[in-house]
Each structure stands twice: as C-alpha cells, then as structure tokens.
Image (cartoon, rainbow, N blue to C red; front, side, top):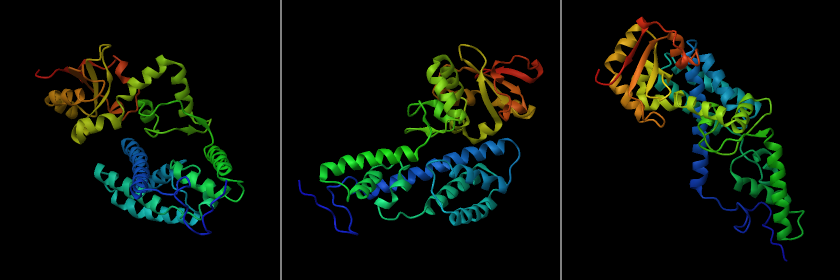
Length: 329
C-alpha cells in the first residue's frame, strides 16, 4: 500500500488522526482548563479565609500550589518566577478578602498561568510534553508525526502511533486510577475534578479513601451523605448572606427532617430565628434535603468554621444556646 507523507514543515493531511480541529473545540478546552484551575484556587482560598488567617502571601502560595498540580500549565523556571510576580500584583486586591475579590483573583490567576504556558514545538517533538493532556486528538497527531519515518505503510503507521501514544500516556500519568465515576459526590468532597479519568500518586490519601469507599459501600454512602454539606454544594443554594450567617453541619434525626445549623454568635442565632422559613426553603432546593422541615440552631464558633466534624451527632450543647425552628413558628 503506497504511503503519502505530508511535505516537511507542512500541516498534516486530513487523512491523519487529529489533522483538523475545530477552533471552538480548542477554545472550549482552554476555557475548561481555566475554569478547573479557578475552582481549585477559589476553594483553597475560601478554606484559608474561614480559618481566620489570610494574607496576600498566602493567596500567592495557594495559587502556585493549585496551579502546580498534575495536569496544570507546564511552565519553565523563568515563567514560574514571572507568574509569582504577577500573582503578587493580583493579590493586592484581596484587602479585604471579599467573596468577589477572591473570585476575581482565582480567575485572573488561572488565566495568567494558562496563557503563560510554554508554546508547543513541532508535533512529533512535543509528544512527551503533551502526553498528560486530556486532548487525545493532539496526542494522536503528535504520535503520528513521531512514528512517520519508521512505519512501513499506513496500517503499520496507525499501529505504531497507537502503541506510542498509549506508552507515552502511561509514562505521563503515573500513579494508580481513582475508582470514582464522573459526577460522584466524593470527587468534590476529596477536591478532585468532577469528570474524567483520575490517577493519583499511591501515597495520596484521597486515592486510598476512594478505593476504600469503592470496596466498602457503607463507608462510601456515609461519605456521600456528608458531601451534601460541603461548601460548594450549599453556599450557591443559600446565597452569600445566609452562608455568612450560618453553616448547616448535619442532620439531627435519622429521618433527615431537621438540620443542625451552627451560628458564630448569639446575634447570628437570633437572626436565624427570623429567617428560618427562608433557610428551610433554600435547603429543600438542594438534592438530598427535600424532607427538611425544621432547623436547630447552635451557637458554636468552631463548628461554624468547620473545625469540629461530626457536630451533627453531638447532643451536649446547652439548652440556652440551641433552638429548633420550624417555618411559621
């Protein structure tokens, strides 16, 4: 079978895998990368703010850690130094660290890092650099170029390209697979991307938790129920005002009709008495809270900050600091 090689330096023919790519698909991939990096940075920033200790240097360090995760932008040392300087400038807007300022910083930091990513060289030479990319068409195109001069014919070229792409993919993605399906609530609880295949280093405790959850359904179900109270789930439903006022931390009863709510102060608990109906209504809009008909307010600054896991199961709070509220009462 005759072979048809594209001229040296020319773009590949449409007959080769990945030769053509719609601009919209490249734009969508770039937007998805920025959005995922923004999500990770914003969540880490919110956790640090809730802990009560936050500064511009903390924001820069958090952004660099999240952007340095596997699958993030691949930057040279010089680009990393430039990125740190750029993040330091962006962090000046975080005084005070309002939700809007945090959101803007996370977006701008992700955009800055991905636009600074090293430009690709010739397709075949960049195979190892892009093997970690979720864009399989780009990997296939690079594998075809890398094996073009070694194949006997087109069929042999396809076999070689597939084998090379799989090999480089495995090298670029070390670690063990994470047995969590796309959309699984445990992904968000463990701070993992919501979709796509996942691999984590063997020592990563998140992979261990995911494997235990897959082998022990009772343990996995417990974690998935706890995931309903995660910040990224409840904050959009409650709104910024209610979220700053209280933190739903668990169910009081087995029927899951009453929610334990932690307030930071007595003043916040009193305001919750006036907004109990609104809180119950908003909770019912979230999956897993349809049966809720009352809330129990507890003045507990530690639980409000998420520092006392399991507060929903404790009954040691004094009567003077808690009250059960039902809509209309």
